[in-house]
Image 1 (cartoon, rainbow, N blue to C red):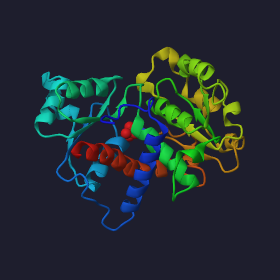
Image 2: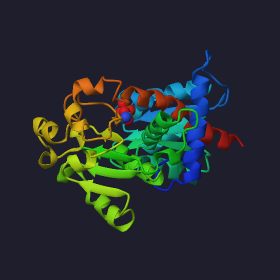
Image 3: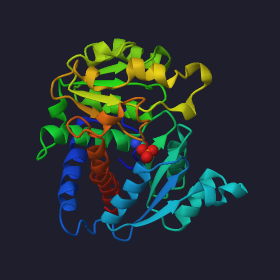
Length: 324
Ligand code: CP
């Protein structure tokens, strides 16, 4: 695969290769040097047109651990403000010798448009989607998958470990590219996926998919309780105020009352339940503040740590494919 734009069409073998490769890089990261020469001489350019802490920094660190050179494009101080287009910006970085571009944009499809242009020009440049609008955030879902599989078998994380486990994905699913990518990967793993949120924030699209394609694997709920019942994992999502129109916006107090993840609510789940959140978190809204910081339940810090090995694996797999 030359570009990583989304997970909707990934097959089992691709997930397994990614998990195994990330596992190898986790071992590299446990060494004193933490570095391999795999992408020496290659240039990775981070092009983030939307804010990011985790994705941008961990792609940067992952590229450095692979010995690539990394450029960080910052829209606020760039020539975008003088009217340069996104495609011309991408071509400028191409002219500097970029091999891999990691692209985040508030508009769905921007990484795809740049990938199409790079292919049309026969540049050989690979595009990694760092999150496009409400569409997909593949590297986040892959790091979530790696975190969950590693929790069950750290030595040999693999897709089959999640078969028949139950995950509740709770909150603003409509605006969440993270939820969308996670739904594809977890369905591929054979996981029971239960979506729960206010009716205005759970898209009808998934009701159709549930009925037509995954009647025994995907379920939607407007109440949180049936989604949480006996769940092995709970993934709670940020309310994305920046993408909401007023009529979709529940009050924060009301939202926490009906959908917030609290210790009391976790009593409905499997006794060993773990909680995920892609970050950034609205503390006390989608998850209670004390629960977020409780390592007995929260996987939030592990998710961030997993992100480095998983992003090393993604850069390595497409970077080495290019040099073959
Ligand atoms: N989860 C995630 O995408 O976080 P950032 O916006 O900080 O990159």
